[in-house]
Image 1 (cartoon, rainbow, N blue to C red):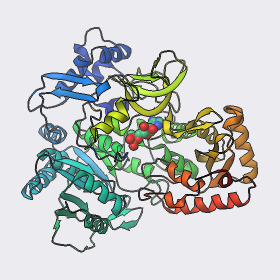
Image 2: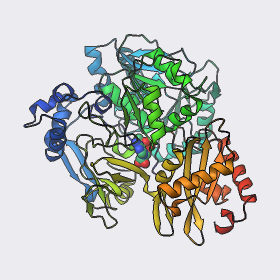
Image 3: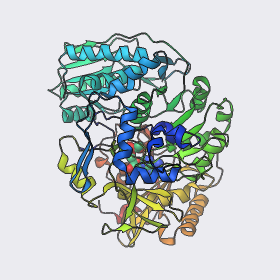
Image 4: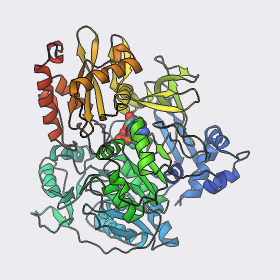
Length: 631
Ligand code: 6R9
């Protein structure tokens, strides 16, 4: 099973992209020392061109300069996208944990590596590179003593905390793969992932704490491992002081001591169970010797000022979050931001889904006080790191709200048509592919290489298919239009759900929306919009409904106009902010038995509300979608 929640093996983060993309100004020499050795490269455009036409030279320089190798590579790359053959740095050997820790312990042992922003505001814990290395080595030794060896896969089921990072790095250190399972997953979903990874070792905590609530993680592991005969041992760290039932299989881990030293602070608020947490909370910042924040809580605990109070308290310089949280906070009003001093912020990042213009502007104007660039970064689990983003670029280069815009160095996005032919002109849309391999890319699907080839390499031979659609503007900038499987076909007109959502979200009364297609016996599919309103709108829903329909008809076309608009309190979302459209589709199809695994939902009560609201809407409608849909 290919999951968007990452369970990939450790990969080396070869670029300083987290730093670069989120840096304010652009200066070739200061920003990329390797470029000094690249002939004829003096500006951003030349560097971009060099990174593609001299890709071996480019990546070899980056890899040699920024990583410590145990043995050097002899071949930079041997890739054939059409056959799914992806090999980078053959002959080379390195240890990612040495690159994330030991290198920095040699130069700046007391620099803060991690800031653990615990659930309770003001109770943060700072961990230096030296203590993180110490913790990692001890854990690595423990794992080794307990029989974990090179090639094994250890499942980590923990909330973001220093011990979780040390567990990831300890696995990498001893040559084991790690399978980080998002700690919001249910016992069943966890069991499936443990079986898939054939793990004999699981690392967890007694209990998690989130938004003031205690979550029984060890109990979930106990239930999960009942169905996993491969599991021989479960390591249990204490996140809270409450004892939990231990069995013969369980091994308790002690806490460690932390110390503090000032440093630059990178605040990526993603959970480590998702790829953004892997690349930009753990491997990217640590490989570059940065200080990174591990955020355990929620954006609204204890109140909607949490992020900004944290920015003030931890003096965060770069803030990297998801549009869904921005939209949520926007609803609560500007005063929650203005209460705090956010002047340390330099750059604001967004990832995970399209950021609508209103949210982008609020983020820029209110959070960034109009002075911090907002970078909408496009990438995916499969790419390992940021591929398209407005920065780095020349300092004054324009940033268009809600657009990822410019390819990162070494990345060659292309658009293709239905037959797989390259679309070369601007002002055009199509499936988004990547035309050249890059070191951080996925190379296979665990235990299913054929599926990897079919999903990513075969749809458009010679290109890596991302599954997303994009528009390339007149100026050559890229705008992601959404997953291609999120396309609705109304009477033969193909529509991206994101396109309709963007129009709906432009209405000042709307906080956010999710659009899906449902079967319609005349049009093939019809448009159904779920809309969350801002607080205290004071306009009757029928009027708003008509207004939104008119807006969509006018901005896109009449056929794009939603047949149904349902106003809801909140949308069903994963904790990483992805709207669970399959849940919305099942509700509209009235296939409640087919809702599937809901354990990644941030707030399961949202579904019940939506089901009820849908039934109310249908009972009030003569032509309900239920009548036309044959499930
Ligand atoms: C990093 C991450 C990947 C999918 C991706 C796309 C969507 C991510 C986006 C975006 C529009 C952006 N996505 N960033 N859509 N604008 N800036 O989220 O990885 O969980 O694998 O999801 O998320 O659809 O293909 P992952």
